[in-house]
Length: 430
Ligand SMILES: *Cc1c(COP(=O)(O)O)cnc(C)c1O
Image (cartoon, rainbow, N blue to C red; front, side, top):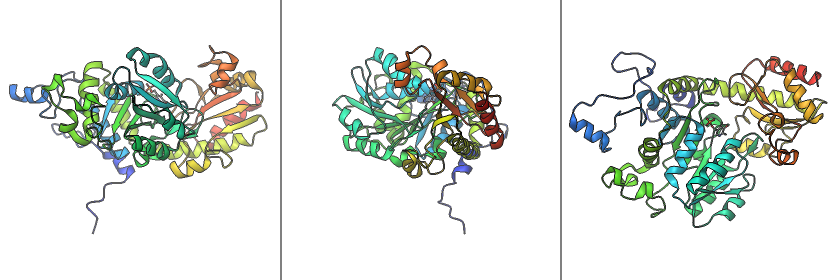
């Protein structure tokens, strides 16, 4: 007898979650619903949709059936109650904070973050008077020290881009729980295949779907995930978007009406409705298609990255390799605990020859593409000192982990031997 209560496994959910054959045509793959708007049955139907008394499609800025498949699939893979797909990873972060913070509020973020997130928090968020307090993701206690009565969220990455830091999510999650503050985890580099932040105490997860979820370097997209774990009402009046009577919905209290998926609803009906970073149905379709092979790709990405890191660590022209999958790496024990299936595909290493060697190494690669992205099936490389960080001084670059000798790789799913041969050829040219 089969156990009917057991939910399908990860690889099955990656292919099927959220999708059924199209009800009107029988199309097996959910079509790209390339439409701005949806016809109402009658005036009562329209009124109930607008009043949030019924779920349904109104206008693609707020939701679309192709987008809904992507949302349900990510929610299923993260073990969460609901998700919201938006135009980019940065839009997802923006809407997460827009839902939680009022002007004058603070949040604590670990400083080991994607550079774009550091810019967003330090500069654009300041215009809204949302104030970031920096902590150290490698020292969970620094999050607790930074908490004040104004703190409305904690934020970190699970595997931090690009230094290969594995973050002790459970330790930060315990601090969040103790203080009654939601923990937001950027799970872009790990994906739910490697790390399920909800199991370690995350309440909200954000993704740049541009990277491994879509996986093919063809679409920008982002996802917010509501784990359904945070009790907004218990937090009193600290999160008014969720708990104050909503003047634009006839005084409805979103946390009372929508319970354990109220955060996802609030991000949609306030954030997406009013700020507007909707994902194009075509991009949602491409990212959903990419996710069908997420487990296969992540296995190959990790296997190739482990082999490339081991190979580089033995090479005479390489000074150091920062990959948590290497036994002598300071994060190797945490990786085995938090991300046991692999250490991801993005890591940095240092060339003995410094700046000149970095430039020559990148020029000598053929299979690897020199560009500013990660999480593509193709292998990618960037030399931060001569590109993304070239406007900084030598000292500033070193402090940002982008010293002259640093090269960042995002290992693709090509044949392992071809990847290693390309690295060797470029190293020979240095
Ligand atoms: C790329 C990236 C982002 C930003 O996502 P976009 O889709 O480019 O807006 C955020 N966090 C991490 C870890 C990323 O790699």
